[in-house]
Length: 90
Ligand SMILES: [Zn+2]
Image 1 (tube, helix red, strand yellow):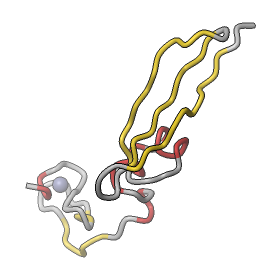
Image 2: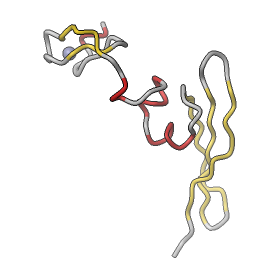
Image 3: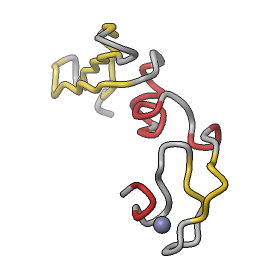
Image 4: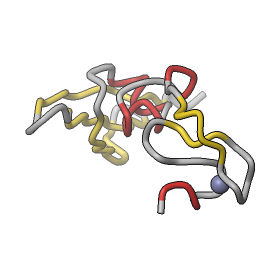
């Protein structure tokens, strides 16, 4: 069986609340490729697996709504101004 794993290399604090997180995918003890992502969260694995967390710093279920419903998709517009179809953000 081939050994493949993802290694967390570093988390560097950037300006504001952003963290720059680097991973390396290692195959058979050789570096295969690198991943660099910017996240609002300092948790590297959660940031990688959960784009919502890395973009907003919290999980989607922690996002609060505004009480306004989008007239196009009928979904509640959240605290960032987004709904299901994107009309609420414009
Ligand atoms: Zn909508």
